Image 1 (cartoon, rainbow, N blue to C red):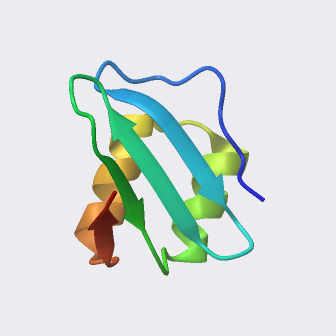
Image 2: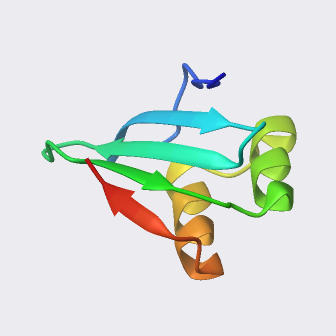
Length: 74
């Protein structure tokens, strides 16, 4: 089941869906038709974003990218 934050703090991310059960994150950027799915995201990154919510969505996605989580597009 995906969680979708409603008030994104980002000027580049259109939608963000997080599945804490599987550690998957789906991102859609403005001006881009592709969706990016990050799999096996570190649970600490997910919980920090969901429960602290001090980072912007962009910083959250950058942290995922820097962690080396596998990514695919659809």
